[in-house]
Length: 340
Image (cartoon, rainbow, N blue to C red):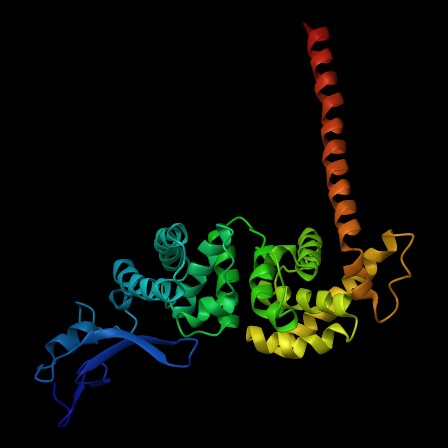
């Protein structure tokens, strides 16, 4: 019934209801704005619709969290498919990546609805869906760029991507680190080699950076971190090894600015990789040791040798596993023949 000029009051529970919209529940998205869901009520409603929403058929108070207040999966999918299409138009991804993202979004929405019915599908979720499709198809797409397509910070896209990977039990796909290194070098290297000739991949800095990327990929050093920032850190280390005029951390200033990364994040990656390469140098009898401040640069210098050692070790491990299975098969076969 009317309770003043612009409010309705439920006669059962006394709840004051706005005359325009009944908000069933709301959630704050990653930009701090509250996204609300509910049932709209006309300004001239006599209270019947409001009372029906707030009470059971027997007249007892129901509150503001009825099952009907949860948006349907179809409605969520429809609205977020529009978001997805806008993001794909901004990114101009290859057709096969865009198609995969469109096929993946219904699975994401369904998984969210099944696990957390009241969880709002945000712009970060849509951006993470695009990033997931690109990564699974080995297409290099930085988290920051995926977020920019939907006005979301890359860190939120990364968090949502990891949540969805666990929720949907998707198979882990390593980042396309080598592709990101080449993409970063296309922006950075002309600043240091304005008159370079030949293809980008043939440049000494890029060749060395690809070796380091392959080595760190074997060690899964980019897992849990932004692959694009990892690629920038690798370039800094290779530039330092090539020109020998400054430490990798000094190159981080210009490289981070050119690639629009946070300088502190790039320097943090450099420190991690410096320590990691220092440990790997212990495998080489001819190295000068990994304890000094230039251990990372020396690791870059010997990255090709270290990469081959890792590949040989992996092959030997697979061969050993295969040989370990053969005697068991032969033994079981002989036992079977004796039993017969």
